Amino acid sequence: MTIRTLEPRSTEVGGVPIARLLPNKGKQPIGAWCFLDHAGPAEFAQDDLGVQVGRHPHTNLQTFSWMIDGEILHKDSLGSEQVIAKNQVNLMTAGTGLNQGISHTEQSVFFGQC
Image 1 (tube, rainbow, N blue to C red):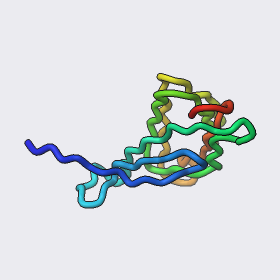
Image 2: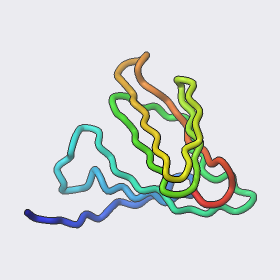
Image 3: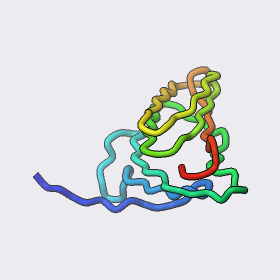
């Protein structure tokens, strides 16, 4: 068995550092839509809005969000509105087609660490 260390690609979304490990250049994909991202940590100033990821669509995939620390507010086009807090997970399943896809937002709940 060979163990290979992968280097993530880094970017920033709304002031939060994002490290994407999968998909990874030179690594065979696990599936058509398999992503592994690590977001944060991030600290925001008192007058900052924090994380404000606007409405964006998903189709043909599931998202699994695991909050290791902090809180985030998830709202989606199905009418779901849930604060995901430390040590909690959120699973969102988006099907295919106009009536099965989901659009959602993620927002900071309060100022501080996310």
